[in-house]
Image 1 (cartoon, helix red, strand yellow):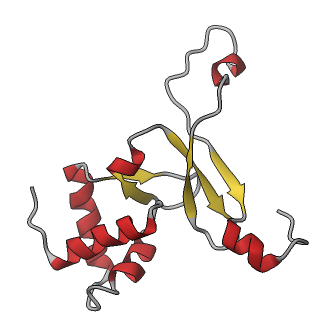
Image 2 (cartoon, helix red, strand yellow):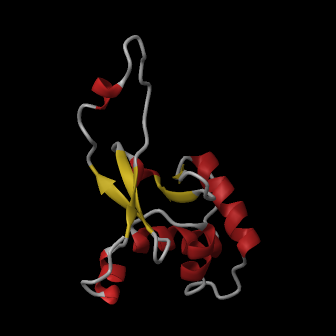
Length: 133
């Protein structure tokens, strides 16, 4: 169990306030509201400790650096949506049924990840009805 530094508390608060997976840079921006002197190296060190403690888990998107989410948020199987305009990632609740039917005969599925792409509600509203992804 790690001691609760002001930096770690600020980083944990960033996760709770966002309620979605965050990139290290997003964590830094949000946590600096509580600890203005926070730097990216401290964010990475703290993330490493939080991973080891089981507090957070990585969210891996193809071709992108990992983002992280609180373990409690990741408790149930879920997927993610990435906004192509603002680069934010959001949790999607639930899962597509029937994926095993897609497997060729004799194949065994041990897991899966689904990432949907498009524009989030805020970006869609800014772009107006003519925006089409």
